[in-house]
Length: 431
Ligand SMILES: *Cc1c(COP(=O)(O)O)cnc(C)c1O
Image 1: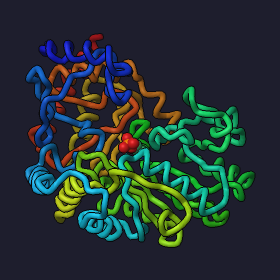
Image 2: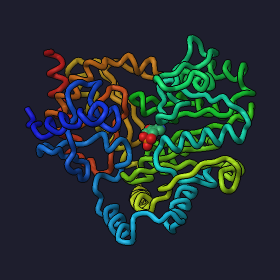
Image 3: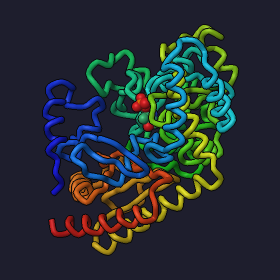
Image 4: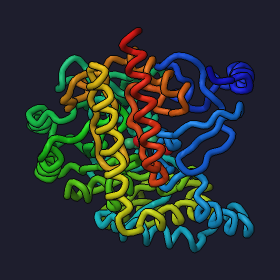
């Protein structure tokens, strides 16, 4: 067994002072059982805890660390920047460079606004959508996560055409009623909803690959279907690329699937590990944001130079030719190896993949909807998670989160992961 003395002591202190001992819920290991480890350092594909245990990391700080932890070029960019001060409250040159990079890599974004988190990006994007269309309703998909804004903490009512219900105490029903929820990949349901409410819908917001309900890919033509419905009804299509942006392809999921959204949201990779978000899109929409236009949105630390420096250094690294195809090869290699190991152990298991992002399911495939994803055996995943952790592999501490590949995951580390999984599958068999 791992020594967890220091982590356990820290968690005991943390539980007295922080809700559940953490600053973000999934870190608490509640859905896999047990207690979290406390990180001391991370490098490349590895993360090390305060007790000296090292793990091959497939969480990657939940998305930003696509170039690996503590990359020397990212650290150097940050240290050069901090020498000149941490925050100015006036425009700084790196914000302009960042805007140039994002708009160049993602052509649907003609204008962008930097914010401080993915949550802020999605909140701001729907405010813009509502302000620009003069409509109030938004459409989201069950299983998709867009941060913790009130309008997104909503679940479907009893039928698709009924009003949304709050998913958390503290969300007013009057607000949740404005959010309509669809099943991902259900073509007819989206059609039906637009037939009924099309002219009241400000925007449809979607994770173009769902990474917050394990990993669910869109069916061929699904995003085009949503694009067509939005265009027909003058509603905006918002791709929430906080996770997929710069990951599944250099130009994000919109490049991978060949779809042009009206607005996009980003975070994670563009901060390189620093707190960042961004939203952007069509010039005629974005110019309605203050001070260019009347829709208000602001931020004391937005466009922070240190965050811009870390993000720009990361964006530079991922533009090396072949970067994303290498990530896809690594993802396929690992997922094929895990599926073979499960098959050899007679365990019902399935993987889904896109470049640098994958899902692990304790059920047979295919998985095409949130309902399918929910049928994964979460208790079994929890046991698997802990056997992997004890062997030095850190997977997401939840059966319903995507796993992430970084460029620093070497073949040797992937082979070690597959070997650990063989042992873990065998232990499930005997359990
Ligand atoms: C992580 C995430 C968010 C929220 O970003 P935060 O920086 O945690 O606020 C929003 N949307 C998607 C798709 C995400 O994966």
